[in-house]
View 1 (cartoon, rainbow, N blue to C red):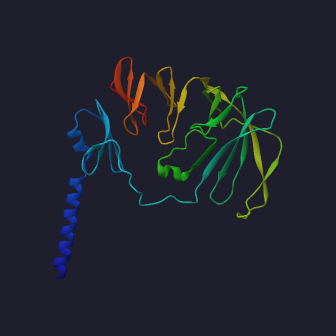
View 2: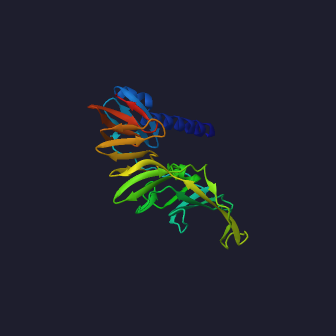
View 3: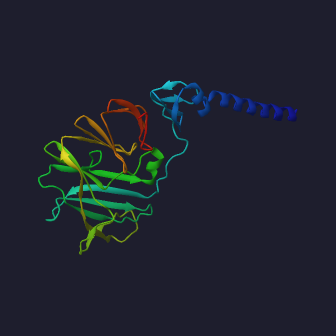
Length: 276
């Protein structure tokens, strides 16, 4: 009797694996279903598929073509004690800089190492500045990878003037120390001395995009800076930026793009064109 139960249990597992394998679409079957497949990415719950004429999502269970993949709740959760960095833009009262960035690094054990970066080289009479995305606070932690957010570019600064915008940046490795000491109070909840020094530096900004009547778009999931200007759409990759007459987002990484009267696709995760 016991042997029969074990055999039925094994048979049940084998049958469930067969059903599971049949109900989940494979990359091989996708290549058989769609002609001229250029690229396929496996995602949670499905695939991103690029063919010669279109880009779309496919559900892994049914093979159905959809505009969005379903949101799948994770079966594990991020840790609370991880390394993090915070950047905050504030106005400065120093004569050599109108704005400053307060940066702090938290090493999960309560030790914070704050720095103040005075921004030198911002044009006069600007209305305001921000990080990419338009915010004055930029936070990143090791948990962001869990949610698909990239660390991005906290050293790139948007500058606003008369309803126009430009982009500047500084090299975080090239900073000049200010020879003085200041102290900041530490939270009572962390067992450290009540005060400890923080460092002050001057960083020189370099103009990346002149202030103009343009749009600068960015989100940390794509992690690509996009610029709209004079009916042109530019992807500012770290190497080999690409400019198009139009760009339409089809999936998380595939854009349908046109240039010089031709239509193709761009994979922003690899900075690779298809169809040109």
